[in-house]
Image 1 (cartoon, chains in turn orange, red):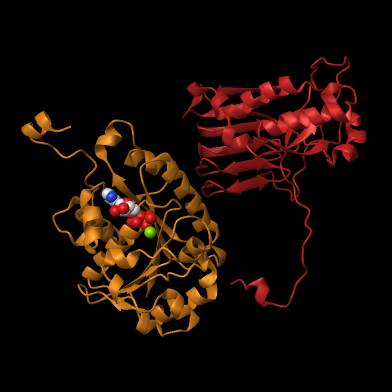
Image 2 (cartoon, rainbow over the protein chains, first blue to last red):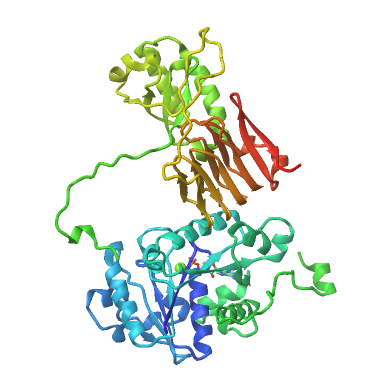
Length: 270
Length: 248
Ligand SMILES: Nc1ncnc2c1ncn2[C@@H]1O[C@H](COP(=O)(O)OP(=O)(O)O)[C@@H](O)[C@H]1O
Ligand SMILES: [Mg+2]
């Protein structure tokens, strides 16, 4: 059984691509066969974070247009054998993605017995975002602990409940999860950011992970290594936990409090 | 699965549908553009997102006389400068009939009629009884057991609306009868949408952006802050919207 998971948010720059890359790696590390697809046509990004940008020959739109086979376009990850990337196209033609084309690609991945298909959604609520979520079985809604991001996520949750293949066909709807990223416990304590509890209450959903704001994320994306693979990082541990919860394990949330700092750090730190 | 219309047999160039849209009424008490602009900019500033580029219908009933075309051009200019978009004249006001053509604005059926007061200029209370909205299929309430999210709108025609989940900021509940929310209400609640002044809004956890009953509304900046997070009911007392903590 293949499960299609969309990583979405409404707002841009909240961490969807970072999350898609890390979740895909985390699932592959546990031996699952995973394909991760970049739906952000024109703003291709996932291949950079996955560190395979120089190996992109064919992309998602090429497959849809029949310029190549899906096999030719899927890039095998160098680190994890069961992980595959389908890059977005650089075309400026936003209509290059069609519902029928997306369905054909997903059907072929399902026939090829992939365990998970991760769809990295573009920002907004336009066509690209709509197609990324349309065939999903589950959704990971990425949200930053701030009002505007929460509002956009609420909007996306409304679309997930009404404008997807599952909702249209009465298949019990898309299973929804919240993932908080760029969580900064100090700013939460100062009241500058919403807490996990606030976000849970406003959106009325459970949280599958809380990823702390961390400089490791940028360093990892510059190096083309998804942050979940940087083993000493809190962000990596948080993503590993999120993957475990996605697979049904029950784990308490971590990294909700400010890290304890030593005496000198407190004396001299900001 | 939807087929793309463009790929199917050529269809008609347009479709005409009968649709109901809630429209904000601006009741005009004076044709002095300065006074209108002052008051409108104040109100628009309290709820910029709600009023900016909002379509409005002008109700000339309160004037009690037919203004000149020139006067009306001043009024329209003031309303536009405040950020609203006048799209028509309320047809309930007899005084608007002759202005529709020269101003190039259609006459629109009223959302909430204004009956000219006995003495011109006096802000008299409206007392005409209103027909009770009738449930259309025998059910008294429309049940919505799912969250209503930002950007979504649920309308209960001719009856109450009962929502047993949360209502997000930017979501909109509209009922011709009462609105009941067994959960947090962060969006807008519009009860008595067809003018039923006895309609009420009830909710368990009050954080509404806007509450409206029979066309009388208040936006969150002017909603009682001490009621935030409390179980609350709202009702219309004459022309004033009242709020009260439930079970207190
Ligand atoms: N947990 C985090 N800590 C710090 N920076 C982050 C974190 N998650 C994402 N970022 C940064 O935020 C930016 C946007 O992330 P990205 O995943 O591209 O978002 P999206 O795909 O939603 O537009 C990137 O610069 C990324 O490095
Ligand atoms: Mg992205």
